[in-house]
Image (cartoon, rainbow, N blue to C red; front, top):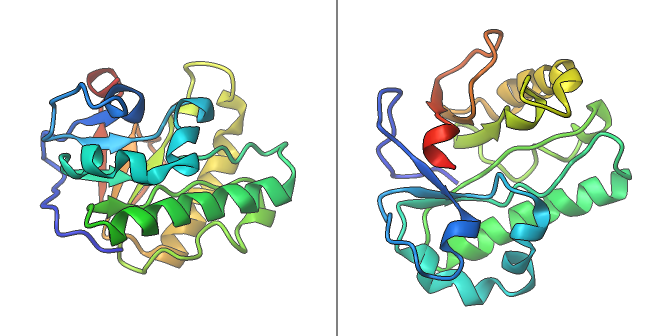
Length: 183
């Protein structure tokens, strides 16, 4: 869905992890809630989303959950995780929460479904953290860029919120979110 949040490439935007807000003890309400975490840290939003509605309403917006799409994962699980991402987003939107879709993909075989359900021209969120030089999946940059370029073609996003440093090859209207300031 399109958002009415005023986001520009020079915004001092910060995110806050769902793990920090799910217990209702955080008060950084000018932030947007993200799910760029291990899945176990936010599985509860899928299992009982109603529990978090009042807490999440207090924040500027909520990015949809970033359920894993590992390239070695069974394609049925990748489809299921895409479904869960979109379903939670639709649920929160219906409850009056501002939602920004997080886009995630696997190999090219996921392109037939992983971009579905996101309106053309939307503001979207992506993360380069897991495929960057910081650690365990830096060898997956090439597959990330294939999916990223496909996302640009299919969704034509108005703005891309990038959690962690964008790769130099990334094009589009990118709003970089400093990982260190949002962790």
